[in-house]
Image (cartoon, rainbow, N blue to C red):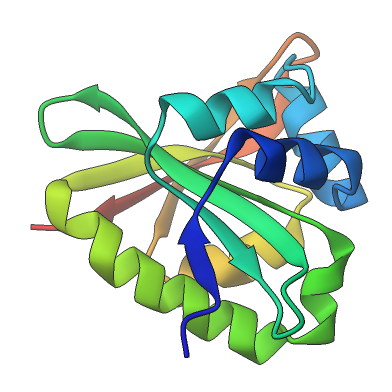
Length: 149
C-alpha cells in the first residue's frame, strides 16, 4: 500500500509547523524561512506528502526543475518518521523510482549535520561529492547528486 500522495499547500504548512529540529536547522542554515516549505510544494514537480498508516503527514518532498533534465530534489520531515522508519525509507524509494524518470540528474545541498538525511540519501542512491560552505553563515553542506539516466 502506498503511503504517499500528491502534496498540497496545507501539507507543506503542517510539516513546517512540526519540522524535525535537524530539518529546521537545514532550512534556516540556507537562509530560508519555514514558509519556503509550502511554497516549495507549489513550485515543484512530483510534490509528494508522505504519511503513516494512520494518515498523519510525516514529510513532504519534490523536485524543482533547474533546466531540461536537471532537478533540485528536496525532502523535509517531522519527527514522526521514527514511528515507522523502515516503511518511510521504502516508500521514499518507491517515490524516487517514479519521480526520477523525468530527469537525467538530481542534485541539492544537504546539511552536513543532518545524519538522518545522509542515510536516506545514500539509501536512495545519492552520492556526496564534496562539502561546501552555504547560506548566510557559510555552514557546511554536502553537495549531493544522483545520475538518473
